[in-house]
Length: 368
Image (tube, rainbow, N blue to C red; front, side, top):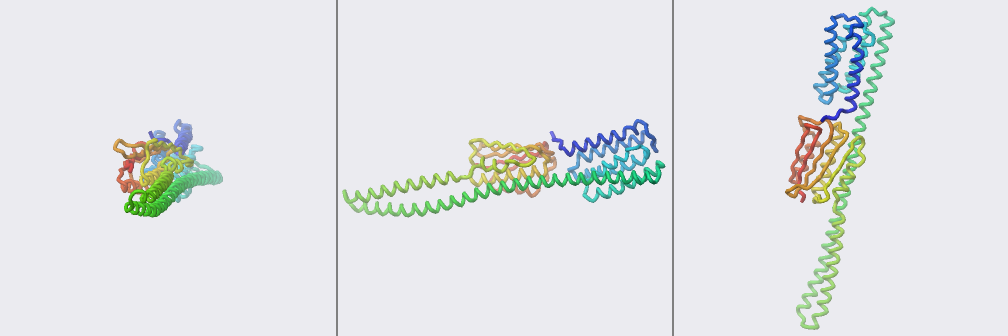
């Protein structure tokens, strides 16, 4: 089920206020210049397209079409009932709605045109010029204040999203950098191990070669030295292998660091205890989770995200994520999701995307 966002609730509240403003005219309390049923049809159409504009605000073409219809119907409703008191408040709401569904320059244009309509309505109603001027100025100021407030709210929301995206990118980069540093350290240890083993194996070979040419007691000292060299070599190998195991990247710790404390998004992470992928797969999963988080923050409008990682029956690893956002029935892959698919494909995995109810990502990769 689609989650209704705070902006949508605000829009629906605005619709209810508009309905309250138009109710007296619908009841015949104020006079209309057209038959009341016609005015009622205009008002009903206005409410319908405003609801539609709020509901489809994330579909630019449909949202702008509904918004244009709402502006025109608002003008018609006000001019058809010029003496309806607070009815021009409808125009305030139509100008404010433009901040969410139209380019920034549309709002000031609609405010100016709405002010002309308010003045025309006063002139048609026979209001004195002084009253027309004061009323027009009042509604102009209200529209400007409402439009600027909406633009400020939208800007704050955009900055919060950008901050959350930067937060995720920074955490992921930190985790990947730490894993890269560990990989360089393991490479250094491997080189040291090679040098150490090469020296000791050479000494062991020489001692055994000398012992092979001696009989009885003469071979014993060489055999004993060879035994000491072998024992030292075994101890060095165990120590180095222990360091390599300790330095292996930990998937749970890495992903927990990436998803922690993301502003405005509740992330729940579940990783099965028996999931222990190879280093290359671990890094791919970290980057995949980073892209899922960024996509959720930027496009989904979600409040919660669930991520799970588990082993599959064919010895692979499956990553599943699901949010409670608006979804996307018609999937259009941007650079982020396309990069996610390419990254998983590069290690022999598979990605499936589903936007029918929220947004769901299922990625299956080999464990090794």
